[in-house]
Image 1 (spheres, rainbow, N blue to C red):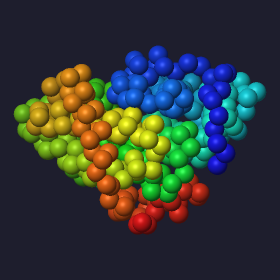
Image 2: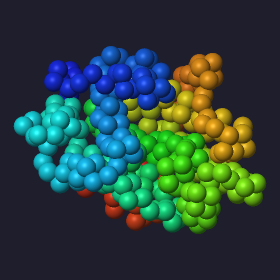
Image 3: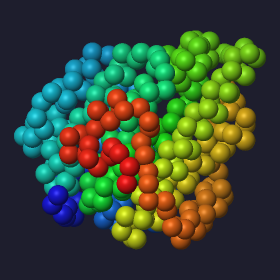
Image 4: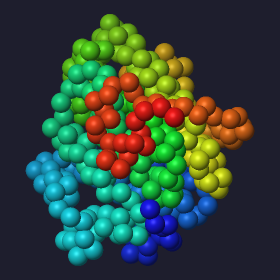
Length: 311
């Protein structure tokens, strides 16, 4: 992989988007060198715009645009400004287009949302919409170590599971449900105004999601040792603070219907100190993906030898 240079000047400033929608990552980015922080902000910004197309716009126009981005080569001369930005990121920031294409696959699947049947399907979805982003983070930070890339996928999956646990009620209002049906057989309309028994069964499912996420956070921890020290602290803090969302939800007993969970600023400060402290502890060398071999088939060809198996 070629070394990436400075942030290309023809890309839009993504910091306002990061500060508005990615508060955890914005917090952590201030602990990183400006070059790395700018690159991560840019990656976050384009992923956010794609996600907004799927989540907020919807309809045939959004579907057509996402399908077009997935099907057509990204060129600097493309009519779609997102395609032009993607072309720049691939050419100048070393982003592998395959994970980005897989991210688009995940977002397109959300346009015609189907209930997730079981745990393997949940992990498959989490890989598509978040594990892929972990691989792209490695690209923009010039991280090639196999264990680090493997850990980045695990961290992306962990964060997505945290998102799902936090947003159960919000997703239900939008007519969506990502908790596997095999865990919790409830329709979105039943979750919006849950009866007492629905609150109890939903809380159990949310706590199960958090347990699953914790396993992925643990398996991601070894990857920080392979990052440049200049960026290691920022990403470790982001992971620790994001995991703190789950901790706050646990304090509620998994009560998904009591409003969205936030990590207060003072707790972010505590978690930041804790994250820096954990970096002094040697990480375990082995890290695995979810034990469902069919999920490994999703990975880009160049990453299969990196992600699968045990080190």
